[in-house]
Length: 102
Image 1: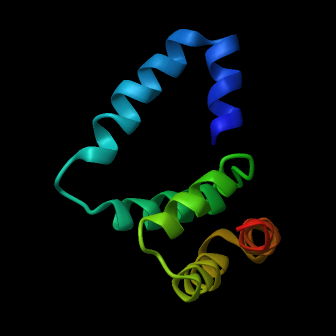
Image 2: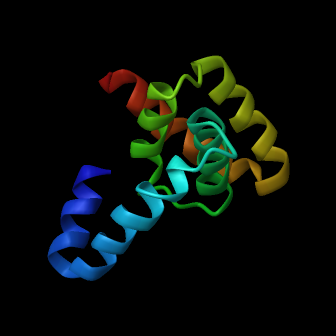
């Protein structure tokens, strides 16, 4: 996510500011859901919408927020039936890359 944020700061600094302040400064900090739950929701949404560029950073964040590799595997399996096997298969390769780099 750092690379994406750096590019966003250079290309669209106001968007980077709003994302930092509102999304990560407010939405992610709200008490209604744990960061762990927010990570599960975010990863599932990114897989379903085929937003592969954002997926590595959020997989790392999910692991840091206490989501286990087994839970991520279950998420990929589950989402494969709702978003399609191609989305899940693409995500699996990206996720393995994150695991390998940690």
